[in-house]
Image (spheres, rainbow, N blue to C red):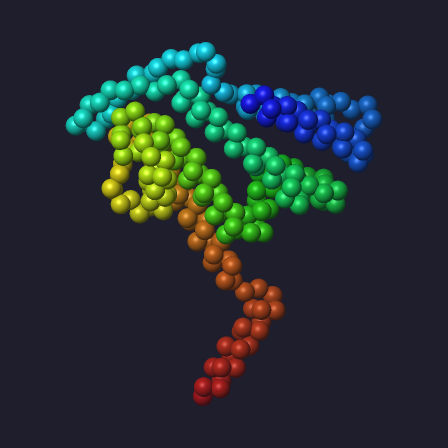
Length: 238
């Protein structure tokens, strides 16, 4: 974690120096006035979440299936490890700088049209450029992340979900709305995770249907050529 925090600080320090070399920041500007310092500190605070050394406590939990009534505990290390999943935002933060949008010409066009080149705009750009690839990667990220959450929530009381591969299988069949029912969560937080996976899966699948439909859509000269070919085949049949 300390190495990660150091790398984040070095990254933003180099980003600030590079902005001065490009002329996007004035010579009198500081990291705080450019907004780079606030962004770096917020990201470092998010990534500073880590299990505390020499500090350990248990949180009592129980199953809610109405049959076993098993009572177990969540460890503090497991809960803090779940909070560490927020570091996934680093992936989206790197996409903003390496997706090909943050260029000098793009900054000019964005300033003219009063558009912010933030992370959300870059995600929209990647989805517009490669929709199927973007949705596939997003599905995998959510599937593996939610599977890790499911494993941490269920492993104290549910033997079938102590395996990470079983949790990935459960998230896959839940996000694709198949739902075989061979394994299922029995704790409250496990079921909340399954509900979240179901909602996210429905959204991603609906977006995938739209993206695949657009990939088969013909525009411009292709649409004109297709219309003429259909017209010619219609007249040729009579």
